[in-house]
Amino acid sequence: MNDMRFGDMLRQARTTAGLTQAELGDGVYSTHFVSLLERGLRQPTPDMVQHFAARLGMDPRTLTWWVEQPPADDQPALTTAVFAANYARDMRDDGLAACEAEHAASIAFEQRNAPVWWDMSMLQAQSLIGLRRLDEAENVLLTMDRSSLMSPTPELRSIVQGRLSVVARSSGRLVEAVELARRAVELTGGLPDHAPARLQAAFILIAALSVKGELDEAWDVATSLDITDGASPAPSLLIAQGAWAIGNVAFRRGDVEVGETYHGLAGKLLLPQADLQAWTEFHRASADYKLHAGIVDDSVRTALDNAALGLQLVGTTTHRQELELAQARYALLTDDLDAAQSLLKGLINQRDLLDYVAETDLEECLGLYYAARESPKQAAHHLAAAARLHSEAGADEKARELLDRIQDLSG
Image (cartoon, rainbow, N blue to C red; front, side, top):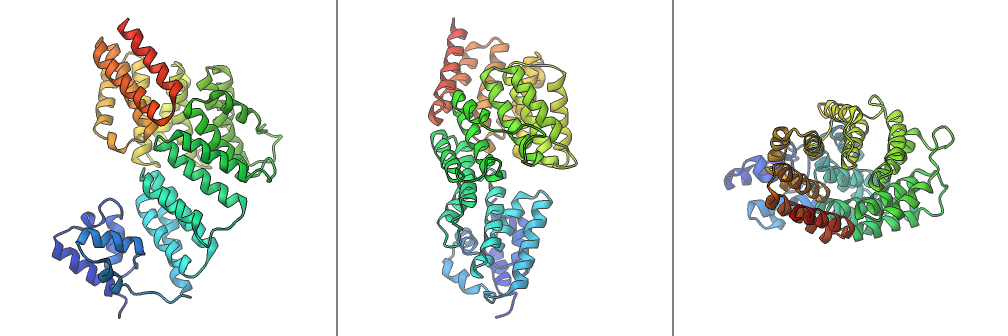
């Protein structure tokens, strides 16, 4: 069996089925990665075989028979696969990174190379989260948690639980998100206060509690952290992330001055030349939290402009949608209803890509838009939709706030 066997057979089967490479990948595997498979430059994982068999209407065992299995100790193959996955990550191509990381993780698993398997599996999960393919990301993380290669160390188990919490939060399962985040924090309980894994777990718990509306507890967790700039042994990026998280809670609680202080610290420490993606996302998020607090000033406009500048170089479709939501809210608060209408219309056309937080925000912005247009029935419809989404997710306090706003409209 030569190295091209699987690729040749896959190409022939795809052509016979009348599918393009994009149709064969079906949004799960990129056209570029399918091309690599067909040219014999990659071999498929078992999950890939299942996917392609379903798309081709074939028995998975047939495709499995085509696969050229690499030698168990083929170190060059693993090195090449890891390089390809990291290159795709560095190029900010989440779709390709997810494919390449899955391929590399499969080889590492066969070779029982636990560190590389961990890195590549986590890269696959993170890339899938970035693509908002949350069910797939969750499956990868759950498989990691159950794997025989999973290290029993609290740091690594905490990271998996934390990522599962992020997936649950983005999916609108807020009670579960809080439980998973608590578990991540518990796993790091024996680590030093400034251990990165412990701080990251705390940040994820703060976010889960905050989105659920448990602001007092979120504030207790936030203020228990010692992240004072210059006095903490934690890296500056972690201090920035902590200040960012604490500022978020402060804005949600209505403590605007405290929120601005902490976001000011985060802004001072997050530099575009050090981490452009984090810098871009911070400015988008900072503007968004201020806008939710009713703040419309030069700092908000600057933050939106910085985020837009960063997204010219980094970021995904999801990140751009989140920025457009913030821009729409800014337009609403500055009475630029035509700009708001244009932004909201574009978001409605892509709403199937929105996660729970963005979808509820879109419905709330639509409610504000129609209220400004003096269409109370349409405004109430969208605010009620946002309230329903919050209630289903477990954010009961936020749902009640929106229902009160509907009452004000009818009054």
